[in-house]
Image (cartoon, rainbow, N blue to C red):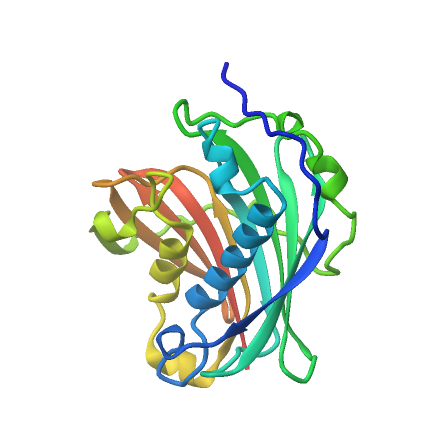
Length: 253
């Protein structure tokens, strides 16, 4: 079995905030940042923080390894709007043998907390596609600060047994540097299942996703959707008939 190793590094900062401006291409018809753009900011922040501390994608790629997102839960009090300046704070809460937990908080210019998120990550070998033991990343355990984000963590979501609400084939623009469908494409596919009238009258309060199997170029994807309670929706994405992803979207006023 191939293992990844990482040279010992001096960590700069266990917890750090990064500044962003909400760009016109990030917002929807109501000038609010889209769920996909919001989560993309979180993942961009995670990548920058990992790079700065010696365990980013470029470092792992030297040993044919990479990070993959397993689960994520996002709680939204208020969506940032176009041109708003926000700060995304991130830190690693814990590191186990199989996965690591990274947290996020977004504050606006007034310092108000508007978004919280928790994510779980695994390291894979990009050649074998197998998960790697995080003990191989020397020193990363010392980077975890043990601080919770004071929110419900992502859990294993239930299956959805409904007819598909959409089907399509995976194309070039869906594929990322790991050779599979980018995590943000899943968010776009799921949030596109709702009408504009839904977004006019309601706001997503919690978005949760489980990434289960890779979706590759040319795969046929079907989206299955079920409202389990009022404004509480479950999703299952299947590739060639097999479960690839599960998600939950909870709306509020």
